[in-house]
Every structure is written in structure tokens, then in C-alpha cells.
Length: 120
Image 1 (cartoon, rainbow, N blue to C red):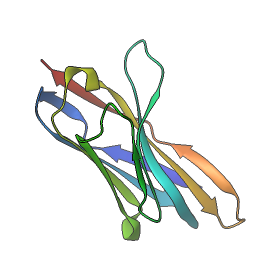
Image 2: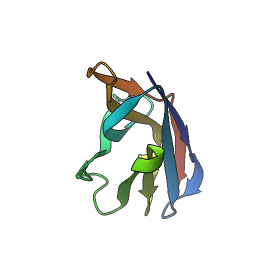
Image 3: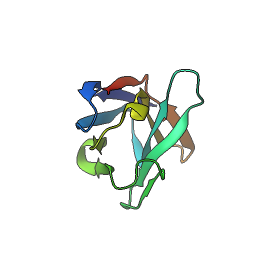
């Protein structure tokens, strides 16, 4: 079983930057991919960015060129560098991962979320 802990959220002015991190810990598993989603008030949760264990990345169109996702395989930690932030980026950001556990099952986990607020 994996446990995800997010950090790095906060309040920033438009045009500023924030870095989110998410560390996966727990019993024996291997990470297939790690991702970030976000949910703004009154809206559905949406995909932001993802990275596979092999390093392939994918981004939502709304964040391409501004956000960068990276994976520290040694520490099972994913980082989301967010630059040129806009007020519409304000949301709770959730870490998500799919792992293969010791029984070779693929299991998906979510973090509890971290608040990002961008003021205009």
C-alpha cells in the first residue's frame, strides 16, 4: 500500500512561481506513473500533468509551457514546478499515482491535496 504526502502549496501573486512535491511511501511497490490533478471551487477535478517511470510526460493544454513535472525515482517523489501562475490556476492540487504492488496488481492512490491560490 502506498501513502502520498503533498507539500509546497500556498499563496502567490499572478506571474509568480510555486513548486509542489509529492512523496510516495509505504510497503513494497514500483511506480508506474505519478500525476497531478486540480480542482477549483465549483468545478470538476481535472488533469494537470503526469510522468511515467520511464520519464515520459504529458500536460494539460492550459499549463503547457508554464508547468514542469519531474520524478525522483530514488525517493519516489514527483515535483511540479509552476511558473507564470494565473488566478485561474487557483485550486486544490492532488497527487495521484499508480503503482504495481508485490502481488503484481496495479493500484491507484490519491493524496489529500494542497491548496494553491494565485492572487491577481
